[in-house]
Length: 282
Length: 265
Image (cartoon, rainbow over all chains, first blue to last red):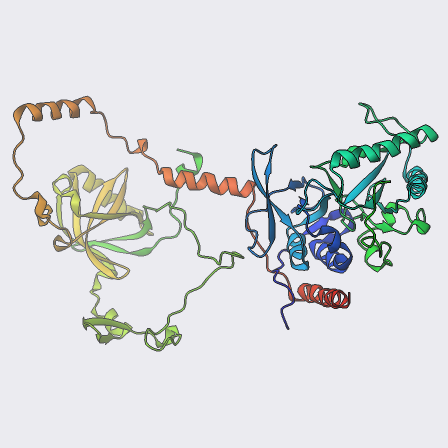
């Protein structure tokens, strides 16, 4: 049989989601299936990986620096980290082999920065991270998401929606690389402030105690060293839910736990035109 | 010493036979007394810890040679061999592999310890009376019996002597197996040192003198290896299992589909 990948798989029957009975084999297969839709979001970015070599029940770990034993064909991006006081070699996932190699390392969650490695200071994504504060939940997040969509539409800005994989929603805008993070951050903040005036459901300020019952728009996620769960990334929680791109028309039809490793690969493409029109901040 | 180390470490007897002195026979069993406690490592393949085995290969034609086709040979000149049959070699062995014949008794402390090789525990086999008799007699006279014995394949001179209330067999080296120190040329023509320097050296030795206690010494390397083994057991022990064929097939099928999808884009 012709060799289809450079990756040698190991320990495929390692249990990664014990309560769901999902092994590494299932996780790798999942990423193979969603690769065509996921790779465009992974490419050209300095990845932050969360690895769970012993499954989600035990401590996973964040990894920015390429792990020991990274093959030489894996693309890396070297940059100085202020917090670590040294240079870090981030893994860049531009191709399916790299994605498979990462999945084999039990990387369950893929987190992407909002900018790409060729212009690290100029993001091409803006994120409205809708974070429901209990007792508010997914239902409330859906309402707020639609309000944001309307606001952006009024300003001539096109946006896309996905589940976070937990209880919230992410609204993502593909923008032209004209602005630095301070600008995209304050733009997202201003929209949140406007919305907070119009509805009780929204909280736009990062206060010490998040207000219960409100949907907090986490605008500071638009930052240099911040990341977003990559579209189609698994979440390391029971149920193996996925951060799933959705059609605005179908928003609310499925609850986050229903969008998971087993159901997502068969779903129809929802963000087909995501990369078509880089938007201007309106 | 830990509890573990104080436990008897003998296992099964490695030989049984008799010690004969004249017409008296003492039936005995031989047990291991000395054990090397170094950690043994196995050779494995690095990427998957798969154990290795060895094969005998002919140096000329690289053919694998099975045990049935192996012979013992003595190299008389480079590249010239004389083959010996296993049975031939066995027939050359003297009878001393059936019994330890003691020919002489000597003062134990007259024996030069440079010839001592290894020691084994002798235990009575069936008759305890004969064993006991020899033990007490040797102890009373502070003497050791000297004889010859073939253990496994080599015949060596041996001592049978008393140690901690039991009879011990100690194998000895032949005289021509032990070099005289003067074979080392640097040792010839050593001059006597200066009197004052000698006094100083003797003082130093006096200051550092004490009683010999073998328990003061321990194998640090072995202890470090043991610590590291325990550490690795708690931490990440690398056992990478190779995937089963069906699992890989399933992934390759999915990958095939994905690659085709990507080609179309």
